[in-house]
Image (cartoon, rainbow, N blue to C red):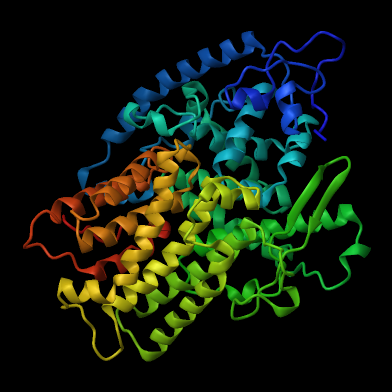
Length: 564
């Protein structure tokens, strides 16, 4: 049955506003109580926000415009004071040319919005950020917010990142965007993020789950804005705090049926805080350390059942991984059972973290040991492929079997593809430790990299399914954009003319996502240069250069510029 509406006006008078679900889908809401007809037919939670305080919204809009006008002149003066010799360093630290925190610290601009706006921003956040569903239980989160029990710093962090997806986009890409732009809210995102950072960092010596969650939300926000250093600081703190609090040691060795449901849920959320920080480090950390040992034996994210903060949440503990990152035989699923996509994502992030470490370690000095370790990565991917089913003919049917969105399924497949692609590229340019083929001809590289091309085409087919059916491309995360870039580079190295449609698909994906994830702009520019260089028959694009791109998430930019 549908969950009872939250914040529903009492009495026979129908609400004057549509429910959140109808509003998000841009459908006409019947505004029936306690549940509208559309939500009742779909057995979905029906939530009516309180009526908008139009006077307050108008006042906030005026304050935001005034603040923007005051800061624009300061920004111009601040930017002009830097010499051109510092341009490269400045680009590495920030792609968005944002002004210092103290320039946007007006308390009124960072004020929390109305409940209606807060619910909207949370809905946008949960729809666009993959690890929102890893760190939070959506129903419980909304209930806690409506009860006004969510910490201010966590609210501001979520609102800040959600607001990034409400900015205006280039008209040519509008058809790929489903969210209605709300520029006024987007302009407040930086102030919300700053206020959240100040709040959580000033009390970092009092760690808690909400503080770790806030740090991780802000890490994604700052990376999206191109603030790579700030993103690293927040990610590292979140990871260390989750370890300090022992969330990486919350094993489940007893009978789960004997554990109090409330305690069981609390332990799961704490453990997920660690998984979220661990996965972030697998993507963004510069440490060349195999992270398998730090997560072995820890239950992967559980499968949530129905429920909420009042009646409790049912959950089924996930599988456990061994030291070699294989599924522990004691936690194997029974026939017919499937793991959650979130759990599969954690498995794949572990494999990707190891792949990245191997590439950075062995790309300049391949050894027999290195080749064998890449073979082990291949074996790990072969083991997980039946669960992910990378070659998905119908992403919609497959996503439905997981009760997830097709966009999230493609996000998971993007991590699988990245590990496979870099293994293939490494083997293509290093077939054995005694014969490095840096000077190999394009023909021999194509021969040894055949699987890399095939896997790239498979991944692009997933992206094309989204484009052809008019899905919301902005729901893909930044890793999917990076994977599209790698796939395009591999095809461009092979034959630009034969794979022109695939290259066009990748370029569209990258350019749309770069609106919301600023570091992807360097990928779009680099891909354009590569495609231009590929037009000339005398220009050879060495496949080996792709290995230099493996650390993109740490640097926020590319280590080399092919074609420039």
